[in-house]
Length: 166
Image 1 (cartoon, helix red, strand yellow):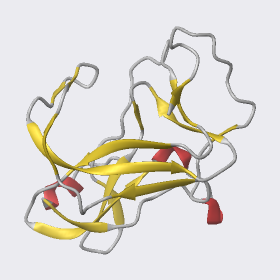
Image 2 (tube, one colour; image 1 turned 90 degrees about the horizontal axis):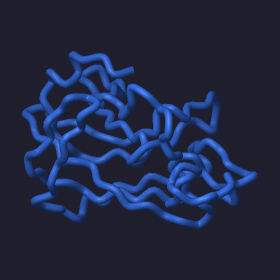
Image 3 (spheres, helix red, strand yellow; image 1 turned 90 degrees about the vertical axis):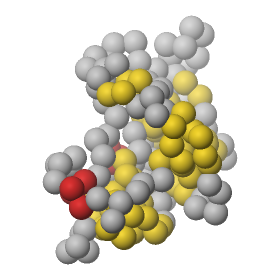
């Protein structure tokens, strides 16, 4: 995974930089591996304290295309966790990452054949459902829709559907 201009080095953007879609980026959540004691961090822009320790699953982002893919900006790709609600509709249950100001942010790029490793916190709650990850800002109509992972078993609180994260 590379960073575009702004990382202190003069690195030209690839000529074939593309937004990812479901035919180019594979999102794999490995629920057979349980990462424990994974430390959260403070996000000053969102004024959220995430200093607790949590359990997580590893997530692999794999570029299956001949192009360099644009995954986001700043310090992490813009993946968003979705859950299947009681009406069997997929809905986001967390706010996508964002910045108040984008000046000086580096782009996150994944070159052809490369993979990136990140994590998704394991959810806990009384409502058993299916979960998945989506790269929401890369939505495209038709068969090349925005990339989503395969769904996996999880449990959340129904109150997580009360917020609107669309």
